[in-house]
Length: 260
Image 1: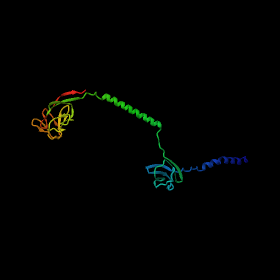
Image 2: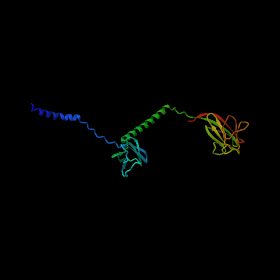
Image 3: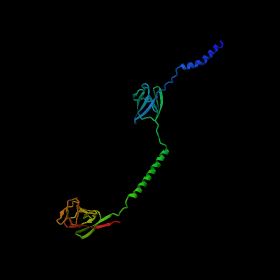
Image 4: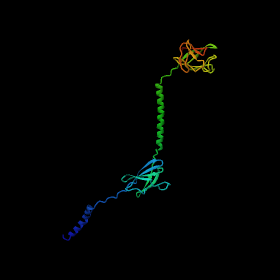
């Protein structure tokens, strides 16, 4: 028994010692990961941009290598927070570049998101369908709501004119007409003192008006021949109107007709 005791003790130490050593040893602390170099990019304008850098100390060695250009250093470096810096660069924002600083290097890639072609096609089909359905709906609503058009009624007036050519009657629908000695006038008046464009006749469905176009011999109304003010519409009743000294005009509403 005494001969076996040292062997038992030795075997016990061989088995127990690694367990005790592992129990009392301090756990290994993994090494801290390096700080992320590129934190973001800012497009200030077409000729200026900024790089947000993560660095424990001042990134005095920050440089940018864009494609086919010389290395560029920032114009200014501003501290934003502990470990955060803003490096200001001049020039256009590169689509891709290599950034070096704080003992690290990183690749800068500005991704441009382009929608797939099938999405463009789907959008075009949807827009075209919406336009066609909207036009069809508008036409249907217009047919439903719009009343059936009625033939416009045109008042019929008679201009009873007496001048050097004698007495005659001219039928006038609604509208604006010119009276004067010019052959291009609607109502031609023949008298020595009649201007080329002597007066305007405004004919509506309800009433008629006359306007003196500042003629030298004037326009007169009524039995006392009251001279009308030039360029002022005057309502016409069943009394005589004198154009100049000798031409007499009377406007009479004789009814209405339906233009077809």
